[in-house]
Each structure stands twice: as structure tokens, then as C-alpha cells.
Length: 526
Image (tube, rainbow, N blue to C red; front, top):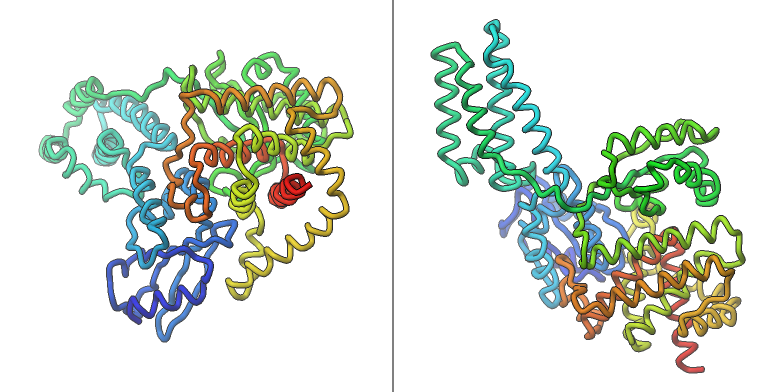
């Protein structure tokens, strides 16, 4: 099979794709052998989740990784926390086979810096390795057996080269081989290590390694720890439900005076981003407010011991984010998340007639009005966002042919049309009220709702707020006929925050956006 035949096969198999890239061992070849699989990344418009599909052409096997192009930013950030970052590596290093409007080229250029960027995962690895090296150096001056001396010397070389690789290039498994990277970036260091190794072999003495570590320690920089640290726990709870969490579990957590001071917000774990989230509910804390991470874990364990049905909970530390404490867009988004989470808490605990679906519809409608988006642009943007959650991973995997995904998506929308027609008067009334910034609910809910409204205004009208994201090129928005870049980026960013923090499941998020588009058209022509 040659490259032209591969492109023809991909175009026919994935008619809604904007393009594809060639990666793997047969990268940059024009004719492909049958010894290795042909690895391809397909950027598709009808896909909601990353999945794979195998193809055959004559004697060649083609492994296709299908990426949802309308969710490319979340895909990239999700992969960033994978130890191998496979998709990031493929996108940043692959050869473009075909590309519509240079969208893939723009995505690849934006993703490239991530290969070498030090993530929180690598920062943690760095600190742990430095601590290990310093502990290890204490043994260099002791009397050791031959086997202990050899093994300790090997551990020393592994540990110190790992630290230096991270220092010079944010090394992880997706970058160059460690030896090659060190030779390219710090050959003098490599020379020192080789000399140290020879001295160990010749003298059978490790004491001079202790002196070298003390000198090396003085050269070590440190990562900036002056910024606010946010830690998120992804927690599995037996018999989990959102109502159970807000009525029984969260009050216990907030009754703990230590956790109450550092609690920020919570949301249903978006498990489609499985590199980060695997469980039921995600809870975020400010780890710099007088509590170390280990202290937060201890207090959480104590809280869950008080709950009859949740004392066997599991957790994973999702990530540790460092955000500027003053004036940044991230800090404003943090405030928005806190207010949205508080709004859900009040709704769940007050048992009002308002549900989170209607609240999401109202807030997204107000957001559209605030940004001044016209009906056509809003419908394009809602379609863009809706595609992220329209299909489940299982639905995509079970589709025998990829083109059937488009049919499956249309069938879902047809069912939603029936539901919308039965409730459109009620829904359009909510949207009409929300344009004025109001909502008919109890005073407690209305206070939280108004805080969200005020925060949206601050975010958008702050002249310093920048909605340009690194992995989301203008060409992608132009492809869906959107021209107002700042307003459109603001809508996509903030609407996703609203839908996520109001704890709607993926299908309901898509349905809410579909109803909003239908309602906007109704209001425009009424």
C-alpha cells in the first residue's frame, strides 16, 4: 500500500474527518511494508471521544486513533497527564496526510511545546528524585559490601541523571532517550558521571560521591512554589448519587473546621477524560491554606469514617494546579467554579422546583446575551460544544462503520425534538427570563445565581482576560463559520465550565445545548 491509497481509504472511511496524520514506525514512508502496522491519527467532526478503529488494505493493517476535533483542547490536556502522553507525541511528531484549511497543522504547532513542558507530574517526580538522592548520599561514607556498593552506585547514576534530564528539558518518556538528551543539552555533566563511574570501579570507594552530591545540590534550582496550589481528589463512593453527596457527604466534610477553610468546589468526575478521572465525584481544595496534602487526605479519611455507606471510599489525586493569586483569568474562573458549586449545593439541599438542567439553560442563555452572539453564531457554537458529549464511548466502539456515527447522532436529536416540542413553552419562558438576568427561584438559590451572573460579567469585561487557548486554533472556529473570536472563545470556555460545574452528565449537557439552540430560534422568530 502506498500513501495515496492510504489517503483514499481514510477519506472514504471517515467522510466527516477534517484530515489525518501518519505516525509510528512507518512515519515518512511513501510505501508501507507489511511487517509493522500503519499508525494513523484521524481528526473527526462526528466523534465525541477518543477511540480506535482497525482497517485493512490488502496485506496492510492500519491502526486508526480517532480524535474528536471539536474537543481537541480537552483531549490534549487529558493526555498531558498520561505518563506516556501518546496522543500528544503523535500529533506533535506526525506527518500530515491531508488537512482541511490547515487546521491540523495549526493544532500540531500548538501542541508541540507540550512535549517538553514540565507538567505537575514531572515536577513531583523531580522533587521525589532530589529527596531520594540526598537520602542516598548519607550511605556513601559508610562501610559497604561489594554488592551494596555496586547497587548503590547504579542507583546514584540512575537518580542523578533523571534529575538532570528533568532540569535541562523537562524529560519524560515521550522525549528523547535520556542519554541522548543529556549529551545534547549538558555533555559536561555526562562526562562527570562517566568519570565518577570509572573512579568507583577503580577505587571501590563511594565517599567522593558524597562530595559530588553536595556540590550538585548547590546547582539545583527549584520550581516556583509561591503560587496557589489546588489539589483535586477523584473519589469513588459506594451507591453514589449527587443528592446523596450534597445532603449527606458534603455537610460532613464542611463540618470539619480544617477542610471547611480550604474547600473550593466539587463536580461529577468527567470520566471520558480517563487519564485524569476514573471515579464518581471530584473535590477540590486549596492546599496552601495552612494544610499540606497529606493533612487533607487524613482529614478526608476521618470524615468518611463517620458515614455508614461511604467508609470504604477510594480516591486518587487528580492533579495539582498552581494558579496566580491575583488578577488572572484562571483566578476568575476559580471564583466562577466556587459560585457554581455553591449554586448546585443550595439547589440539592433546598429541594426547590429548580433543577440543574433548567439552571444550565438559563445561565448559558444569559451568557449568550452578555456576549452579544447572534442566533446563527450561537447555533454553530452549540453544535460545536454538543458534539463533545453527543455520543458515548460505547456507542462509538459498537458502530460497525464509522459513518454510522453521524446517523446515530441525528437519531438522538430527533428524539430530543419530541421532548423539546412537549416542553418548549416552559423552556423558552426560562430563556426569556434569563436574558434579563433573572430566575424565578427561592431567595437562597437566587443569591447564588446572581453571584454567578456577576462573576460572568467580571470575567468577560475584564480587559486583561484572554480567552486564547494554546491548542484551539482560529482555523477550527473559522471552519464552523465563526468570526467573532474573543466572544466565541469566551462562550465555549464559560459554557463548558457552567455545564460541568452544574453536574450534568454528558448526555444531558448535549441535550441542554440542543434545546438552547432550538429555543433561541423560537425566540428570534417569535
